[in-house]
Amino acid sequence: MLPLTLPMKDFAGREKISGSLSKVLDQRGAPAGHDPSVGDITYYAPWGNLALFYRDGQLRQGIGSAGAVRWRHRGPRRAEA
Image (cartoon, rainbow, N blue to C red; front, side, top):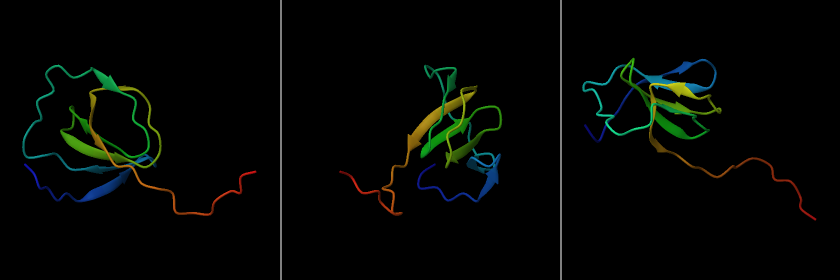
């Protein structure tokens, strides 16, 4: 399935989601749920799609971790003493 290019749309003001993937991902042995953080890439089994979180989510059944994107903040920095 990789490499993969997917159109994404905003969902719930905290994540970008794809449409359904062409194949169901095997989640045997995965936890029943996941508590996503900023940068997490997740798979939502009930819809069969991927999501990229730009705000923290909450623990949900059916969400599995598929990886993460970590970036450095490029905005203004606070002075440290």
